[in-house]
Image 1 (cartoon, rainbow, N blue to C red):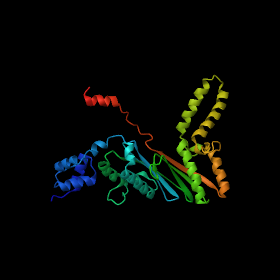
Image 2: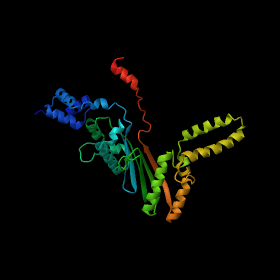
Image 3: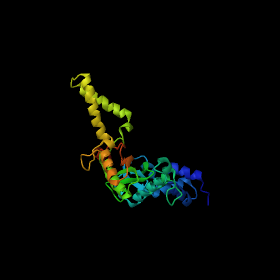
Image 4: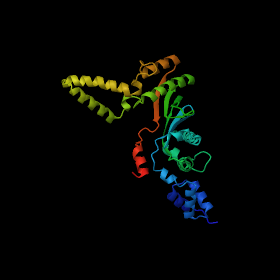
Length: 308
């Protein structure tokens, strides 16, 4: 039998878009003949992965994993929501979250790390899965939060199965307080974050460009009122304060009671727990956020198929 070299596997992989193991199997079955191996892949439908890789993947799942003081969230995309209900895909996303937890949520390290019980990396395992699941798949991002003491609470919104869903939230609470108390508070805060999508934890962490854009918009709006500059300046102070209350987590009003500022919610929880509680960080991953989806023109598609 002809030797199956790494160069041959790479050549077939580049040509077919199929996964590494599929290419190796194809070459093995066809005595290292690349053209016959390509036909073999096409016959089995595996070579179609090359075409799939160029298609937009904006659906899929987000997932969380936690060991208590460290938690991570990951996003893995597919082309359709149907795949999110595929048990094989769910298993892949869960496993990637577990790998991410071992790497504190570092995206590059996670993508390059060994996928469980295989000789492949996380990135290559997804390539392999394209051929079996039948859609373009993409490990898009991961993030982690840690505390030296306390908990990093997790929450999944629109859960498909435990720890998998459409929005993932992490909330880091540093404290010596009872863990059950911290988890309960953390879950409520995470639900709040899922609903309000704050831009920053504190005012000083806001993007300066975003703040400046908001200020300029408010100034132009105020000038249209015809008021003098000294009055406008006072108006802007009040309106920027309102802006901060809308987008900064610690300044927001708690959605659960509709009246208490988040910083005050944490202060009260600290008093009740008999130990200081600090909200040191948070993360929110919403499935598909920022991905430009293709608009499908069904009428044009039908016309194209019919030749009209």
